[in-house]
Length: 501
Image 1: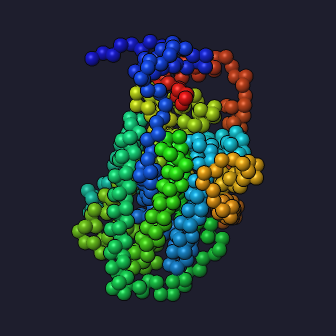
Image 2 (image 1 turned 45 degrees about the vertical axis):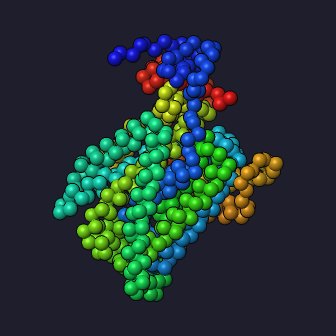
Image 3 (image 1 turned 30 degrees about the vertical axis):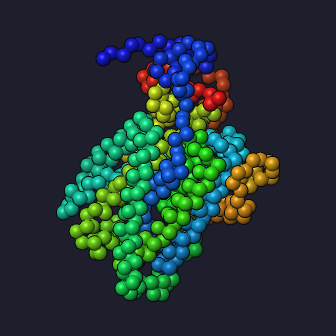
């Protein structure tokens, strides 16, 4: 069946206006009674909020390679201490974001908070680095883990071909993008299912570990704080590994405008999620050490698989599948949340206009979702992603630290601001100080990687003046931009969001 051609007109802003039927009416026409407005809906309930946070935090790291913490601490006891401290610090950061999210009821997470407190330049730099490098690289890394572990049961006796991993990874990335483009409800429902799979996978490790403790397998905990020497200057790198494993507690704030009753749902979802994740992470690491000693853990590239092979027998084949599902959940949650950051940045004029538009029937930010696809594919096939993430770890925690410091600034600048959820001031003070201290000390610990990340971040400054401040662009450039925007609107069937009045 052939669809009728779309009748369209151009608004004063140079883009097409439309309604939910896919028809693009003339400017000024009233919407027919009973028709839904084209806007993002509040479909994120408490359960879906918890699934977004837990499902995004628990990825491949806790199952594959927690050795980064052990390498930079030097002992079992100190590594468990770092895991616990990182959980508490992440809870402090999450509580700070809960106050920010209930006070500033806009989607976009750290971008929005930095914009509100520090202005457009640092906010643009944040979204610039996120769009071009951090998010595509992070998505590619977690997707590669998905590809590797989904193929693991089929290549038990031999090495998995690198090309096969990348091809199945590309398929996984595409499926996630399509899912998030088609339906908010379905992506949220799948996230709930995958979150239960992640928790099941953790329990598969924790329960045998507890049974080992009951049997008296505590030899690896004797003299827990003795081991190979590790300089205090390496502790920031240990914190980076630990905080990276906990990263994801901030993603619910990226979708604030889609959360039902955000004043209650956001703080509750954050508190429940962080308690579950912290307890789960610490117990999982304890379980590892009941069966694997420190030297063996440092030699393993897949700790959960090594652990399960020793204790679970044939059932260990199920572990790679659970790890793959865990990675898929992180991919799905990350794309769902970060696409809203790009959507909000575009709405504020910091990214191309097309990224702030919504599909006329699906009510999803389609352009903001699919913009990640080509960038992620480039990262996937380009080379050493782990090094790239190391370059930019400092940028992530620098801007998160600044966003939380902004909470303290708002307390003094806007003392009468409506704050449905308010935390003691020492919580954001301690968290922001820790983030900024880690960033500063990492310049000393790893000046090469951190320095490259610093330079990449600084490229956002000239980009801001070139793309945002410079308003005397050539006429041909403006005409071409408008034509590209209109063409993409027709192809993707998207229009600007209608007022929520």
